[in-house]
Amino acid sequence: DGGITQSPKYLFRKEGQNVTLSCEQNLNHDAMYWYRQDPGQGLRLIYYSQIVNDFQKGDIAEGYSVSREKKESFPLTVTSAQKNPTAFYLCASSTQEHNQPQHFGDGTRLSIL
Amino acid sequence: DAKTTQPNSMESNEEEPVHLPCNHSTISGTDYIHWYRQLPSQGPEYVIHGLTSNVNNRMASLAIAEDRKSSTLILHRATLRDAAVYYCILRDLERMYSGGGADGLTFGKGTHLIIQP
Image (cartoon, rainbow over all chains, first blue to last red):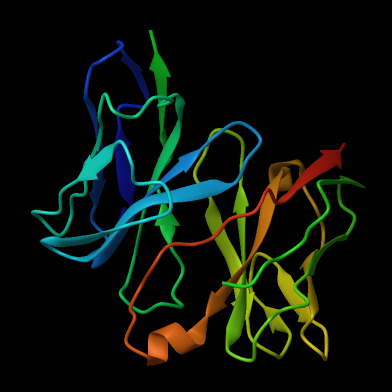
């Protein structure tokens, strides 16, 4: 089945440590996205990529980094500069057309030890 | 993207219709109305979208007011599996025509739908 796979489902980070969240899609979508969700809140956009080797900052990019070396992969690194990284992280993909639906993964829950 | 307003929560009984409202009084002529829902501990799921006319698909119906300042997502026969947070989101079609390409969605807090058995 085509879809988006995020791993791991749960992740724990020590203070001062960088961690990388994986997102893979086999939907042949050009565009991919990373969102952050805090308890009881809606999703907020961290980064997005419309095409391989290109990405743009979203509303809350500080303390995060991404790469887009392959069409099917869009990993997110939560750096030590992100002071409040505990959240639910969601990856999505879509075609390049602006109005098309986004398809989401099941998320990674990141916690600080 | 223009702002939307939704009730924080709604409650309904199983097997009854559910009408989820969304106000978007500052909507522009080129804004599409999208709905997504998020089940507990999962990513959001696309439900439906429309511009001016009412829309139906296998999941739901979307009723859009004539002045487009509000819309209603209709679940015709709610089941326990429909218990989720429902988000109403506006998407500017003008961005697509200007070559802006795909960009992120702007989520509010949505409506938490509770279904009673």
